[in-house]
Amino acid sequence: MSRLGCRCGADMTDTEGPSPHLLNVFLKSEIDNALSYNPDIALWDLYTGWDELAERQNSFQKRPEPVEYWYCTECKRIYEVQAISRGGILRCFKPVSDLTEECTLENFEELFIFWDKEMDDFLGFGNDYQLKDYLAQAKEKHFISPDQRTIYGFDAATNKLICKYILES
Image (cartoon, rainbow, N blue to C red):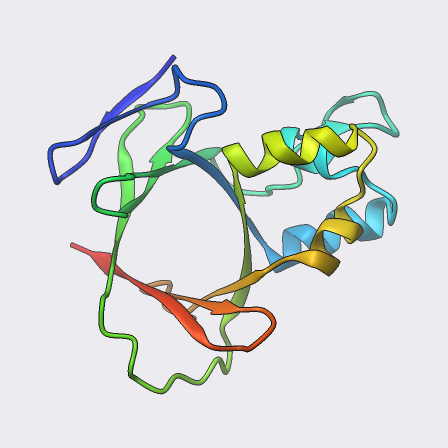
């Protein structure tokens, strides 16, 4: 069980399962890698890092150190936290309320955000519900800027900007 205090003063924990505070974030390149490895990979296998073909753990997140993502339900901040070494906060993104700016997504990388609560709902479809089926029905698309300081979220059907986050110092 873990706990993280938010800058707004709220407490985030993973004691409640599924947690409203936990999410997993994959880069498009990581999703593409998983699908090229196994075009029929189950969504749950990607989410948990289970390698069904080799029957062992195999994370598709190829990063120097595993990270966890925490979401504050009070102020909507998103934290990137070291998962192993110190548990330190690497980055914090805060929401921006003004969504009127025009944005171009040139050189942005697509992000795939999996909410812990959402994944619990998808378990209702069975452990063999495929990643490609999930991607086909996704209601939102997210992108991170090349300098990794801004995240944009769009409604997948209308391509309308629905959220923006900026790196908080």
